[in-house]
Amino acid sequence: MREIHGHYVAPKGQIAIVAARFNEAVVERLLSGAVDQLKRHGVLPEQLEVIKVPGAYELPFACKQLAKTGRFSGIVALGAVIRGATSH
Image 1: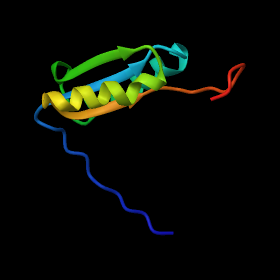
Image 2 (image 1 turned 180 degrees about the vertical axis):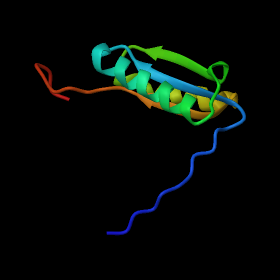
Image 3 (image 1 turned 45 degrees about the horizontal axis):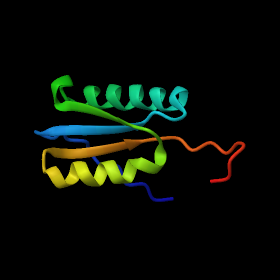
Image 4 (image 1 turned 120 degrees about the horizontal axis):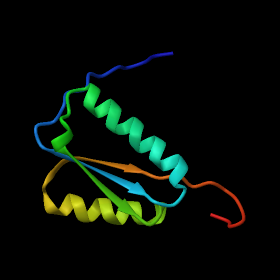
């Protein structure tokens, strides 16, 4: 098996993290882990902006709007879809 490992280089600009509020117990842990890893790789807290959206469905729309602003060097989307009473 061939594996390719890249090296993370912290961007100079802002990073947006868009997180769904639905399934908050799961998403908050994902958010905590993402922030932790970004900081470990040299991203400063003031470079991070967290945007909360209602659910996973809204993630791509919010990311697209943020990308259009040109303010961010990177955008991270976090959400969780858990199969339960409703079909997805």
